[in-house]
Length: 207
Image 1: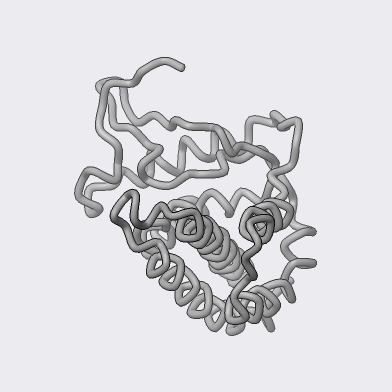
Image 2: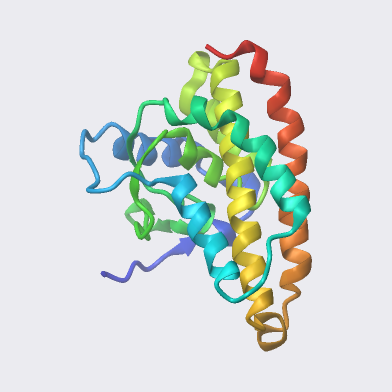
């Protein structure tokens, strides 16, 4: 792939994020009418991450399984949302400020999914960044349904990253990289539980 000379958004002050440009780039992707060969298949991906740990002879934490079970109550609603091609990993680090404007990179996880998944990804560092982008993206069309989907997908992403961190702990990467992946996994699970409580407040207002 071509090298882009510039600075990733995660390296600039969050208050200077060009949210209008981020929203424009994502809308360009979402409305392109292109279709990925495969759906993003979030729930299948989650099972694949779980399998990495299970195949090593480790079990899944009961607290994780309890949180996941609560989240899966909303799977039918999320599954029925219209799917468009999405970036799949639209966190700030994948947006580059260049001399020719803002660019988005790293389409490794692209697939067909609810476009709000990308907006939730943007809240990877700070949830409020994703919320601010959600407001810019939808403007006066923002409603409880979209808020629900945003919080639900961010909850899913927390569960997904919990599994990634747990796997890294299991294979010894905490010692190798001098990062406490056990603690990182725990923090993602705490975030997922926090978001479960938020989405429960919206469930009675769904379309």
